[in-house]
Image 1: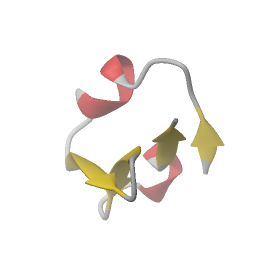
Image 2: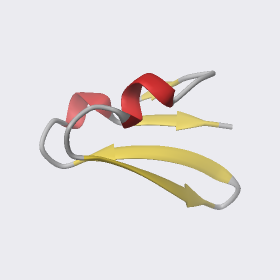
Image 3: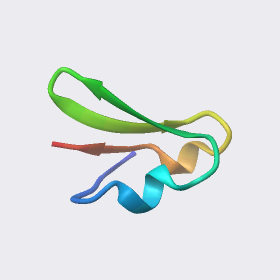
Image 4: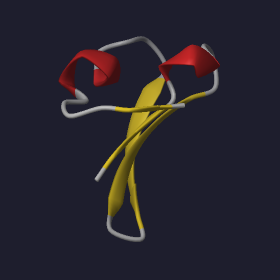
Length: 40
């Protein structure tokens, strides 16, 4: 998982979902887990 300043490019990847948990923004992707990222 990477910590990114911008998640815009990752949320365009197929299968990606943007989720907010505990004040942090995450991108999760079951199809391709290398797109996992955190912001905040």
